[in-house]
Image (cartoon, rainbow, N blue to C red; front, side):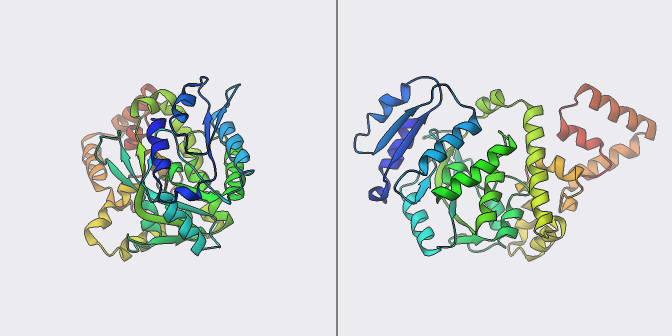
Length: 335
């Protein structure tokens, strides 16, 4: 997978602007060194982490080292993802045009591999939060818009980031303090927003490889749900600080959406695990759009006496305490 990533770096139209490529090996072996040797024209610096670092500690070390590089900007690429050929060129040009912006993110395609068709285009939440601008433009999000973009799910992927090296290091240091391993991309987006406007390209320029089996091994449902809930509370607190009423803002966006058939899909951009915490915090917008579950719940409640409903609720939560999506069916708040 690293080979594909480095090949995409080598094919960039802004290849002449690449001052250094740091390949940071944190897997306990030197296998990546042989792959790096296949690209002698790239200015690669290979770093073997010994002893191994935790995921957040690894990011802190890597981004701190990047501050010493001569170039002003740093781009992130996970070794299992790859860039389209114009990613660096577009990002650097936009950052040059908008001197007040410290970071550029782009939309991305989710894929299973190099021969996979596109599973999904990742970036809808930024498009919604910005007020449905033309998808051909690069948008500039302010603090309030960035906060809204983070409410329902992660707004963009790490591998799409091109940022001022100092802002990246300082922002990630704040994220690392949270200890959130699973849902820190939303937190990084917010940290950048605190420092200035965020540029977002709605045209996908990066390919993100999906690892469903690997992700399940790394994060058990209880741990991931707890960290998603923590990140969601941080997003809501940021919204509160910025004076953003999440429910009313999404109602406004729903009414302003120029594509009428798309309006009902807006809640589809919310991660189910995020919805659980939003419901608990009474901050879930557009609840009326989730009618199928609400209607089914109403029918079941008519057929089930109150004592039976309460007994079923307690039994389900006792037997499957870590299944919030299903447990949410028994909540008093329709979701």
